[in-house]
Length: 309
Image (cartoon, rainbow, N blue to C red; front, top):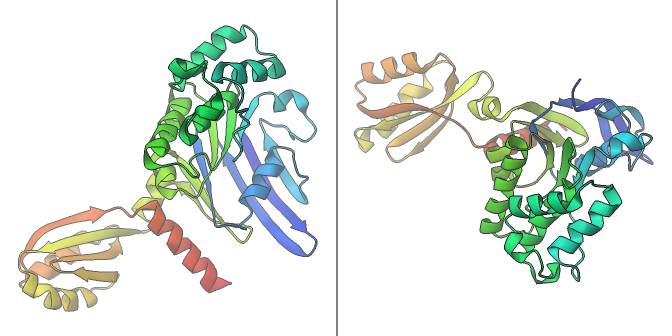
């Protein structure tokens, strides 16, 4: 059984359709990225999964249950929304001690000490949380979210508003959660670099529909096409090389920058490209496959969605 199962989920607010029949699963131990522009339906999906909103139709189950009606399963879920849920006047230790009582954590002292060390906050455990940086508060918020040893954690924009150093700390913490703790992570984020670094799979949502759903490695490698680049030995041959490439079937999206030309080709098209270029007298210094960034994939998906709407 998948940890998260969403099937033909629909939701409207009045006449406005927010979710239009989305389906996806999240497997145990995955870091799953849920992406999309503002208003795409990401927050609505997360709220339905957490039992905070009712689905219009379809189903949204976490560990086989509807969290809106199953309190027992809800206790196996951790949540960090944009608000860290941290009290500034309490120390880091006191914050976690307070939540440990709410969660009914056994041997809370041992668990709190373990999490403070995990989050790198042991030396500041007795300091008021109000004296912490934004990044430190976010780390304490993550520690709070996993205090009761959940099987899945929902993270909503965990690096929002953080400087690059704090983003790195949070990203490292997410990877350790998935790796060392074996926790499944559902990550709602606009930070595409973060998602590419930490996620196994992603879903890209736009206008209430999933436009792409695959592993990060498959998406960046390209579906059916390969991003291929050649570096010319002589920059003066760039024009001639471009004309040759334009005549090869399957080559598209040519981009010439000085002595470098990038393009999209069929997965098995590299030999033909190289043979045709060298046969035309074009001297090459380097040729290699290139992967696209998740940001490029995301922008392509958004562009295609706009064109079809």
